[in-house]
View 1 (spheres, each protein chain N blue to C red):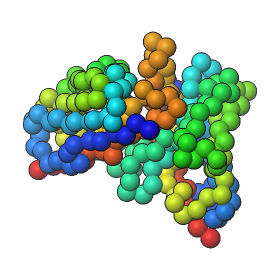
View 2 (view 1 turned 135 degrees about the horizontal axis):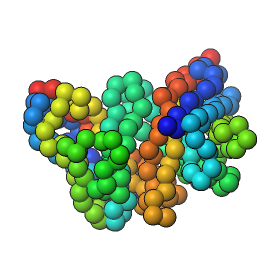
View 3 (view 1 turned 90 degrees about the vertical axis):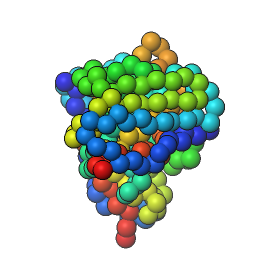
View 4 (view 1 turned 90 degrees about the horizontal axis):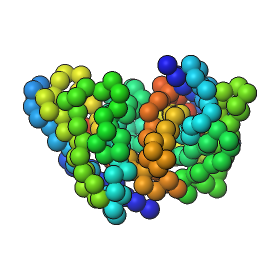
Length: 108
Length: 121
């Protein structure tokens, strides 16, 4: 099974900050990596697919990068509505999609 | 736009079978993969499995012996059955559309709001 890890597990930031979240796969997954945002009591929302492609309707302050085993989600200027938990998910193994444990972004 | 809605009992007794249905509206169930994902209280996301509109399936190996996902294209619905449930199966259950891009990228781009299922006697 491909294991996904994320760092940090949580972070505190201020509006306007640049925020970076890292996701690491236990083996190379090329660019088969997606990012989701989840707010409390809500369903996850797709932000980035194929490591760096921005989902339609998602603000351009969100960006993704990486390939192989190391990936990054960047929020260029944190907005109040961005406080949420972020999950990475690999789709390299179509036999078992796996999510990272999540990174909670809250207000400093 | 496409919307998904989960439905089913919110309370299931231990050892019984959890049954949920996801109704797809605003679009066709054809030509997509359809997934179930769950989230135990206060925890992360776990992919349960998916079904292609044609009926082919793929399940999480950790749940495979207890999971069945089926599709009814005439009703634009797909369903989840999880047998022999225990308290560990208590979770919010989400259905989601899994889009295949360029023939080999998969991502879940449309989600239902989720339904809470509690396993308790």
